[in-house]
Image (tube, rainbow, N blue to C red; front, side, top):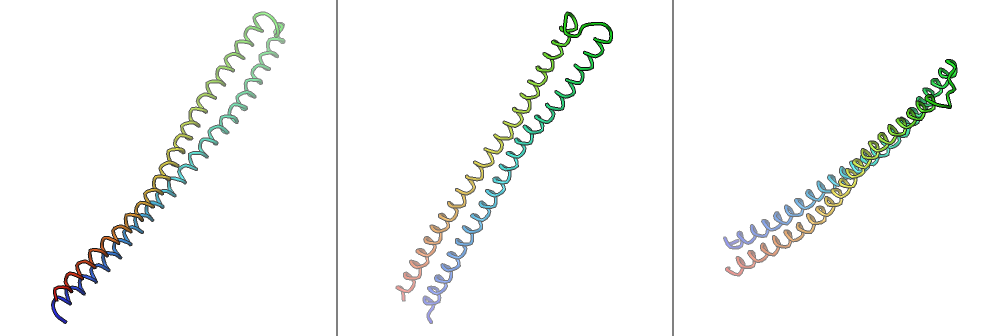
Length: 168
C-alpha cells in the first residue's frame, strides 16, 4: 500500500468519524432541546395549576369572609335590638349599610387581587408553553443542521479521497 493509498484510507476513516460526530452532536442537541421543552411544558402546567388554585382559594376565603361578616352583622342586630334600638331603621340601619358597603369594597379588592395574581400565573404559563414550542423548533433545526454537517463531511471526505487516489 502506497503512501497516497494510506492517506486516502485515513481520509475515508476521518470522513466516517466526522459523519458520526455530526450525527451524535445533532442527536445530543436535539435531545437537550426536547428535554428543555418538556421542562417548559411542565412549568406551563404548574403555572396553570397555580392560577386555578389562586382563584379557588380566593373563592374559599371570600365565602369564609362573607360568613364572618354575616355573623358580625347578626351580632350587631342582636346587640342593637337588646339595647332597645330598632336595627332596621335610622342610625342603626346606616351603620349596617356602611358595614355592608365596606364588605363589598373589601370583596371587590380581594377579587381584583386574586384575578391579577391568577392572570400573572396564566401569562407565565403562556410564556413557558411558547418557550417549549421554541425548544421543539430548535430540536428540529439541530437535526436538520446535523444532516447538512454529515453531508458536508461526507462530500469533503469523498472529494479528498478521490483526489488522493487520483494522485496515485
